[in-house]
View 1 (cartoon, one colour):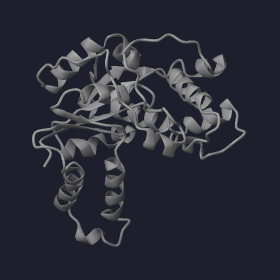
View 2: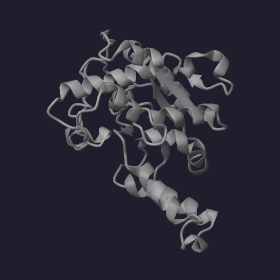
View 3: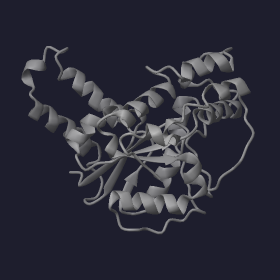
Length: 272
């Protein structure tokens, strides 16, 4: 049974894999890339809801036990006492559920200017010109403008869905669970970010090695058609680079970083 659980969510290409790689350095912690737990919970909720003929066999107590059982079963092979960090961009859309299942859990949200997230995805495509990506349904001959429309779809787009549920959580009643980590701060001030994160989580300090961070998920990236997508460089550092997307696309999303506007932080979300 899991003794302590937290969640990593937020926007894609915004540091969640790097954060997991750093957390994994601490032998007390378990962290990885996107897990299937959120999807498993969603399927079970559908089967236990009023839309299923089996609805009559469930009450809230049974639903609660079954959903917690998914987490316990998925992480059953971990040693007792491990602090688990489960990663999925959809967790921000399930903040109320997480609060019910794990009242003391926090949702760590990695964020980044949406324009730079789009740029990062396009850069990955350019690195793999012989591949077609699952993110774009393996389509060919689409322009960057068409790809951005797919990415920013609020229902199922890689960026749009995550951005929408991030806003939902930010302005909702469970915003107090959030810990927001801007990508630029994570790569330029990793020691401070990790120290303050440990403080927020109530964990003992740990000395991380920011010059030797190694992480890769080649099999998972191959399924996505994006080799190297979750590969982490050895040294944590800020690297300035020019845009590879048209400037009008970047300009379109310059106002999307709502976490940078104090007047919109009505719930007092913790930003590191």
